[in-house]
Amino acid sequence: MNDSNRIYGGMSRRELLAAIGAVGLGAGLGGALSLPGSALAASSIPRQGGRIRVACMSSSTADTLDPAKGALSTDYTRHYMVYSGLTQFDGDLNPLPALAESIASDDMTVWVFNLRRGVEFHSGKPLTAADVVYSLLRHKDKTVASKVASIAANIRSARALTPHQVEVELAGPNVDFPVILATSHFLIVPEGTTDFSTAPGCGPYKLKEFVPGVRTIVTRNQNYWKPGRPYLDEIELIAISDEMARVNALLSGDVQLVNAVDPRSIRRISASGTAAVQETSSGLYSNLIMRQDQFPGNNPDFVLALKYLFDRETIKRALFRGKGMLGNDHPVPPNHKFYASDLPVRAHDLDRAAYHLRRSGVGKAPFPLFASPAATGSVDMAALLQLSAHKIGLNLRVNRMPSDGYWSNHWMKHPLSFGNVNPRPSIDLLLSTFFVSTASWNESAWHHPGFDQLVIAARGEADEARRRQMYVDAQVMIHEHCGVGIPLFFSFIDGFDKRLQGMGTIPTGGLMGYSFAEYVWWNG
Image 1 (cartoon, rainbow, N blue to C red):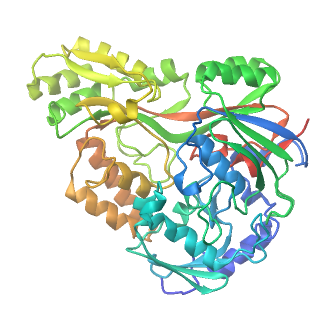
Image 2: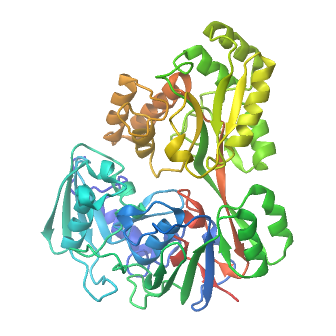
Image 3: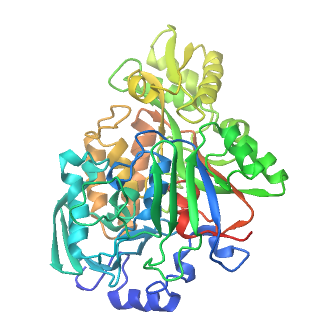
């Protein structure tokens, strides 16, 4: 880009500001562009007031108010309640201006953020460039133990140009940097904050009570930087680990919103007359991991044999009641703009599986396959895979492991096991985290120098057509050579009281990508 006023997404600064003015995204942020997904079709006018209880699927005594350390859905939800970021997602995962009023970059390496004026933290302290610089650089401090330290390592420097302008230099070009900054870990805290016994944010709600592993209570921030928002007076966030108990709590009126609803509970919720479900198509998947540094996953024909054994249609229909999208043994879901749509979905083909099994010459010894309820659907998928394998003379022995300790004791520890990967807001984050050779979570120990080079090149490619082709080529490489099998992408399903209005979808997770709090209102 040659125009110094060009910003992320190809619009000029003047064009963006014109668009902001047209839809009210600047001062009021009440226009259509700011509302994700089906919230646009809400049946009533937003109203203020009301209190709701929300039940997530998991919580622990390690729950945190530090956005850098978020690890569970309750953490992400809590952090979006009390903090704000430089950008935020719309329903298509585009980064919208938030605390950063505008963003400019000539080369996708040096980024300039112009901050919104008049924003205050809950303490009354004004937001300045120093707060942003501190918030970004603290992820590079090893003592912070940030969950995104590896991503923040790409930030070479950050400095305040003026009290309301920040310059960030990356180690290399990254078109998706504004996307990354919309994730919950990069939410902004006041300069110098080290004590997170409170939540010193500038988000839509203020912290009233926080008991790790028990509950969080927040109240409406009357001085939120989006006038008129949020709508609710108070939200209580709890966790109910058992799915049936969560649904029962919703139907009894004890809670008004729950996440992680099993597809088998949809009919019951819909029949209640008082509650409904919200489905969010996403990139969430459980995957078969075939370690390529161990036998038999180091045999390419054995890997292909297992990939052809997946009966994807049956998995979708029988295990998930049709709530999902077919996977094609690579991590990009069909609803993504860079999805390799011309690559045929690998069919359930026993003849081809048997052919590759014979070519592999691995013998007939039983091969242990580790699965757990911790990896969504993996136990049932392993059972179906075992049945198909039996038909071609392959002896898979399914070992069902408990959820407790699965990720530390079994994930990536065996030649054959299952993993579970949550959606990432960009393909680059997904590939860099799970598939490049040096990734700490390179589940199948796959090493492909050409793939690694392609990911780096795509990260800095500003031309969308060329970038799309790079990501298509990357998907083909994974599909054909990597030791992972991905049969299905699961939908997130939330259940909610019908009096709760404004629910929409953001594909990074349930509960509107965990950011429902600023969008919903109570119409009771």
